[in-house]
Image (cartoon, rainbow, N blue to C red; front, top):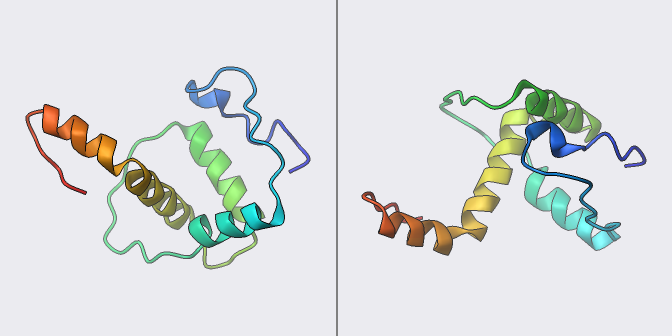
Length: 104
C-alpha cells in the first residue's frame, strides 16, 4: 500500500510508533493471499466485541482485496485460526497452568 496511515494500528492501543514489516516480495504476497484471503464458510456465528475503529479498518481492507466471496468474518476467522495454530504450544502451556485445559 502506498498510504502508510491506512494500516496505522495505534488506534487499537496495542502498538506504539510505526511498525516496519518490510516490503513484501511476490512470494510473500502470494503466501498471504493463500492463507488469509481465502473465502471461508463461517457457519453458525457468534458476535464478539472489538473496537469500532478496527472493524472499520477491516471493512475497508477487505473491500480493497476485491474478492466478492471474502467477508470480514472470513478474513478474521482465517487470521484467528493462523494465530491459534502458530501459538498452539504456548496457549496449551498457559492453559495447563490455569484451572482449565484446552487442547488445540
